[in-house]
Amino acid sequence: GEPALNIDSETSQAKREAARLRAALAALLVAHQIAGNGKTKEEAEAAANQQIERIISGKK
Image (cartoon, rainbow, N blue to C red):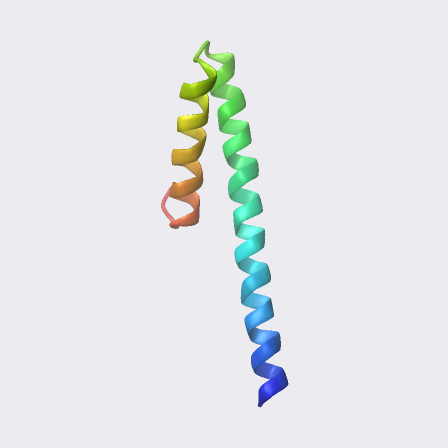
């Protein structure tokens, strides 16, 4: 019982980390597109943060 529980929790931890990394990458791409549209760094960062929150919370 014990080892399997540890492996499961490590697996879900790894999946959460991977999801966060994908979210961060997606947000960087979005921020890059926004920056290309002449927005300020602050606007691009705010939009990127919104995108990260959306992805982490599972919304599109």
